[in-house]
Length: 99
View (cartoon, helix red, strand yellow):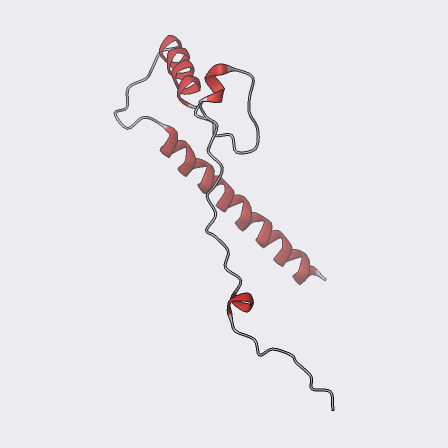
């Protein structure tokens, strides 16, 4: 039983280390490359411009009431004309002769 408990503990420790490494990597990626520290005002301005830029929504099945959002309405998809392959083949006529 102790070997099972040890293997579980080792797996938990390994998982914690992987998660910690992933968090550190994510923090490194989210930091600016030039190393400058932005002020809170710049962060607020950047957040507002990001929100304005993220309003690029596309509506397929919904027509919003807002005039600005109606511009995001997509045209319905154009489907190719369906041609039934069975209907286009010439089937022999089913005539029965009565004798």
